[in-house]
Each structure stands twice: as C-alpha cells, then as structure tokens.
Length: 89
Image (cartoon, rainbow, N blue to C red):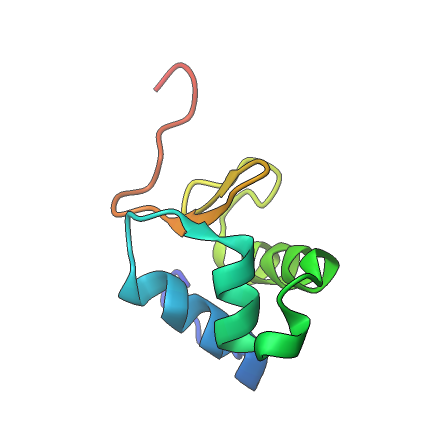
C-alpha cells in the first residue's frame, strides 16, 4: 500500500484472493465463509466481519469510508473494480 509491503495472514490472503477472483461481483456471506474457512463455518458471519475489518485497516486509506472492499448489507462483500468515489468527488 503506497509502496509499502502489507503483510497478511493466510486467512486474510485467502479472503482477499477470493474477492479479487470475483472483482466487481458481490459474493454472499455464505460463499466467502465456505470458501475461506470451510463449509462448517458457513453461518459464522462474525468471522467474516472481523476479517473484513482487519483487511480494511490494512488496505484502505480511510477504513471508516472504504472504497475497495465494499459491503452489501445483508448480502455480502465485493472488491471494487475501481475505488468507489466518496461523496463530493
């Protein structure tokens, strides 16, 4: 990020990799959980939220206003194909 290395855990890497493989597409919570953690974790949405929070802190310039890893409440997450613009930009 900004020419600095970003170190990710294996789980963080697998999550961003799955989002990147499907860039621009909303991936349902259950899909991400099953793919990254395994089928028995498909309902553990708190795991997913925690890791998305960590990734945003590591990858977003302003984690409170994400432009790369976007939420679709009640559905899932997507990796934006282009950083989302902020209001007023």
